[in-house]
Image (tube, rainbow, N blue to C red; front, side, top):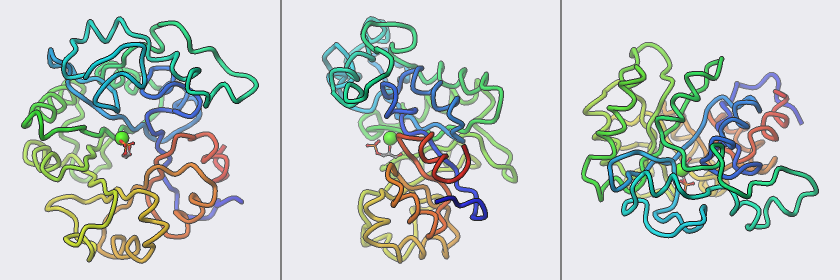
Length: 274
Ligand code: G3P
Ligand code: CA
């Protein structure tokens, strides 16, 4: 099925092309850019010595050969770890007949700093957007956002002109985190992530100042009328994590603005954009 005449949905690579390469690594983001993804999604956490790194879980245990909380480790500790070989061990890649061997630390599969990801985007040779998710920002009382905005400033991305589409947006399940970003940088778009529809937001209202809704695909499947409400209220809708063709078709039918997926190449193909 192709959707050539439909509204152009943005295809966002979730943790990079994370079905094909270890999530949050340079390899995964390079693959996503090669695949033609419009944007890259990443989670950010602060290390013990104040660097923002792209890691989803609180601990590094699942996605590296090390152990411990990101917040308790310094960047040098993380740089010594291999964030690639778990992909083989997980079985998800091994099930396929061919594919790269991710075992062994390399520059492509070592810990990725947000700074390095911003450099990759700057050197992509085409416009690639970034959807940056702040993880556990309440614990750090503003430090995650502060570091994030400092870094974006270095790349000239923290204060996009209000009448132009921004190359970067900040996402969070925490309304407080988004508010901190909005207060410091009012033109930077923010995305309120939702796992379920809370009574406060049932009527399609989002936290103050937030323009983009980020519902999980389960909300979209179970409450399509809610998605229509959000759209009617003038919000953009960015849905995660959309990996199956039926879900892509549902998102297209509902007119959402962005699909966040582990499989950007497959989704682009399904949309007739390969
Ligand atoms: O893109 C939003 C989505 O990534 C939120 O869930 O757990 O994958 O960070 P999670
Ligand atoms: Ca995320």
